[in-house]
Amino acid sequence: MESRVVYEIMQYWDEDDAGWGAAERDLAAVWRRQPKWVVSRMLTSVGPNAMLVSDDLEGGDARPEGKP
Image (cartoon, rainbow, N blue to C red; front, side, top):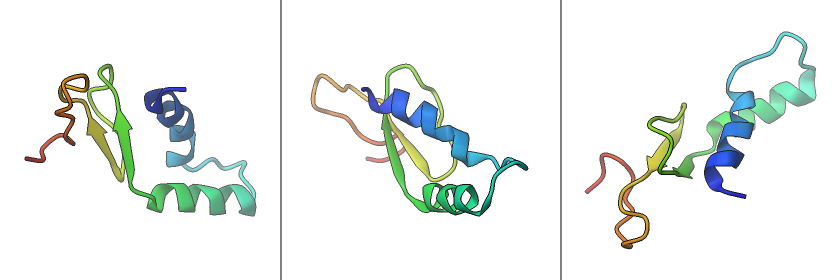
């Protein structure tokens, strides 16, 4: 599965849900703290604590956006 797809699924945990119990709130807190690198040609932006890697992926020049 592509990292973009996994990231899009896991973005569910970026926003609190009033119906969550303690376990869900704890998992969301852990998810939000983790730095994430998302490799995608399709995405143009990512959420909090995530970095989009989208430069020349096939040419071996993949750099996080905004990084030299």
